Length: 326
Image 1 (cartoon, rainbow, N blue to C red):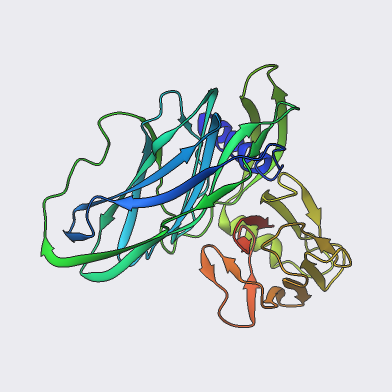
Image 2 (spheres, rainbow, N blue to C red; image 1 turned 90 degrees about the vertical axis):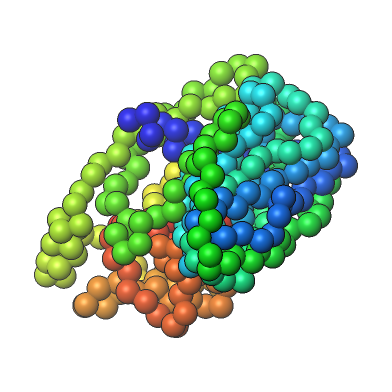
């Protein structure tokens, strides 16, 4: 239950970040690494840095990596009072969020992200996105405007020689686990049944109490394989993005998804194109078609034009919109 509450808390923080802060500011975020040459098995340390003229109460970041060469371990923030908000991780993309109840003006390291070097390769890490959070006039978390991203691409060289592994955990700071999804194990068959929100006046803390219903993969497949007259209707359960927490039943097909309001499902996100994807149904099941916007299923890009949708599949549109098909 503690893990479910923490996950719901993190989803609220990510959802609130889509609200724009009114004040303009001068700030920058960039990546650094103490060295770019490592041996197999050693810990790769990457630092997220900032220089801000305004007091902030949190930050988020997404770092892309090659899962064949690197495995994320954890992140830690040396900033006093910054607490990590666990988010579902996708293979190849570290997703981190931190929040504090106390505003702080920062200049220096925001977070240190640790990876394990898996094998000999020429690779690198790339800062996909980052934001600083402030509290707006309504008391909600909002991204600080006027933030520029500096150095974001760090090349790395990993030698085949096996090195000595460093300690997995930092000596200090709030530790945020970054365990990637287990390969070939699929996505757990749970769904959000309800979310209760409480806003504490004068504080930068949001609490979600989530109740989830767990179903085995076999039970899900059995429901889908019933005759069409008794087959359970499908739905999309949005976990991250402008409509996070909303469940949308799919009553007719095909379903068009995109930024254009004329779509069956309109996602008002800057990284979702006008006509991003399509879901359609046949007697054999449900299918997803990518329309050129960049679509991922369970962390893997949709390389063909059409793929099968199974209950529990996690679909990502663009950079940050996530929904569960079920």
